Amino acid sequence: MKRVFSGVQPTGNLHIGNYLGALKQFVELQEDHECIYCVVDMHSITVPQDPKELKQHTLDIAALYMAVGVDPKKSIIFAQSTVPGHAELNWILTCNSYTGELSRMTQYKQKSHGAESAPTGLFMYPVLMAADILLYDTDIVPVGNDQKQHIELTRDLAIRVNNKYGETFVVPEGRFMKAGARVMALDDPTAKMSKSAPNEMSRISLLDEPSKIKKAIMRSTTDSDGVIRFDIDNKPGISNLLSIYSAFSGKTIEQLEKDYEGSGYGQFKKDLVEVTVDALSPIRERFLEIRGSQELIDAMKNGTERANAIAEPVIKRVKDRFGLGI
Ligand code: AQP
Image (tube, rainbow, N blue to C red):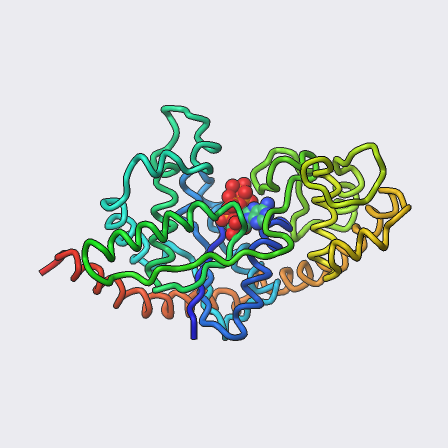
């Protein structure tokens, strides 16, 4: 069975971009793959976090994994910081990465704003991500399109080490959704939807009440020509809404364009509110059941044990290749 690994940062409530780009794939893949889903809490401290909130958010994300349908009996769910192999492999890979390639990472450039005071952790983020993936001999990494560059770097690092030290790592591949791989902000369809954007109306969180979902969709930025047509360059707002509609309803974009020929944006947005509320309501309900439960804690403890059991032999193999230890 092929092995799958992916992670989400506990930096706030997940939005529909995280769901449609990544989590939806998590659920699909667990039926016929060995899946490892991590809450990457060490990634989140690349920017300052409130320690109490961070612990809560870590549990929130794990509960959301389960609420969308990840089954801890089939998949491994755990927090990154509870498996020491991530930090160990991070250092070994750091010593095999170049400052030049890390400086070219778009996410670093966007989040650091070129400031000298940007945290070193932000710069090293992609190496830790490579360590997360390579630690489990991962074959497939389901992520959103924004992570393509980091997956490429992971592959480069794996191939570099394999060439230098002999077969050490499995070289993984990214897996991207057709609909929902890049959900854009509702207030600015040229920027990706993000948990940390200051405007709450820019996103729909998985735990949003129906009234908030309605407000965010009805206010979303579109254009003034009133035609419901997919055209990313000239109509990014309506194209983004069409992608979201398609991902939640299972209808193709062509079908939606036909269905809404001649109708205005108002009706289209109203229907999208309904489709979105219908998709998210069961997730919210299930989350509320799981979040405070012993079932969640047990699933995560068990996940840590199972993840460690896979990681330890890999770390041993890597250390042997590098001549580390006695
Ligand atoms: N807008 C998006 N569309 C599709 N997929 C997305 N992902 C994130 N944003 C979108 C995918 O969600 C997974 C988890 O992302 P993450 O939390 O680890 O980090 P991120 O990419 O930095 O997500 P955010 O929401 O933008 O968080 P902040 O604001 O904290 O930086 C990944 O698979 C990602 O591709």
